[in-house]
Length: 488
Image (cartoon, rainbow, N blue to C red; front, side, top):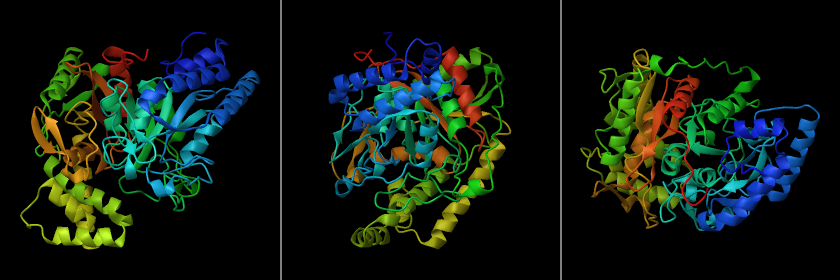
């Protein structure tokens, strides 16, 4: 049988429709590959192979009856934090290692209805709160490009699975870059949807009731793949309101991409941040991409007076992010955080200080931060009258060596040989997350060490097809997925 390990979902569907391969054969091959390689990578924390083979058989039967669909019979994985009925959802917390979901998340229901074959669940860090993917239940996940390095987090297991050829698709989530950082570190594609576009119900903290979102604040769930075309397909499949929430009265009617020709796009390129330095190799990759775009006829600019204040964005985002994450903190942890925040110098506007304030943010101060976000959202809308896409780093560095030291807040990250605050890296995720904008992470090159370098393509609010279409054109013109050496 042809080796389909690194085929896209679209290619797999074509092969099945042509009778070249069956869903059962693809699923069997994926299972064999996981059993052969995942001991080194540790991306699949829960295997569901029996049900996957049964689902593949059902897909083959459906296709024999003339049924079709973009994920019918396609093997894929799902992030641990997204509920699959009958499987544990842990978020990396040992007390929840036996927390079995009663129902599928909305996105899982939609994928199953489309005939997707779910191989299992992928690893996450504790509380989904890290740029690495390790926890006390399942251990650490390694990057297929270099097993001594992280594949990213918190959707790192999904990114590693895609890079290693464990299924053609995956689902992850993102509040601080958790889709985009793993894609960047692992050389794959991911899309952070506009806020509220893809239903969140079933991406639920263990032990709590899944409820429909009405609006949402920062977090999203989104697709991961080895091609931008597959991201577009997944978005079409998943982007409709929750039938238990806004779906009672609304349906999605997303605008098409602004352009279908690469040269028609107007692009603003960012390679720096006022509060977070970017490594020379990431800046060089972005500069090379910008130069190639200009040669291809794309309108490229390096600055604009319309760009919202990135420092203000980062500070308000840190407050909003920590306020959201701290809502479930135990009383003793919250009390300690209050003491820490009270001791801060009012003139300290470092991102670490803003995170500390965010943990104990009053509702009054939350409204103030939310107002900053609303103003910036309007500024972004104005910017997108001049540009179609903003290209920005996903993270300041390529994938870094494992660092599981505690506490996380004391970790540092090396940027061109100098130590910087580890958690400040969330600022790059916050550029798109705070205003709720869509952002597509795509491969853009490799470092001198041969590690993947990605960029994020930020688009206008609820115009998700614009950055994804731009990603498709980049994939066709310049960069496509490259398998890591040793796993081909």
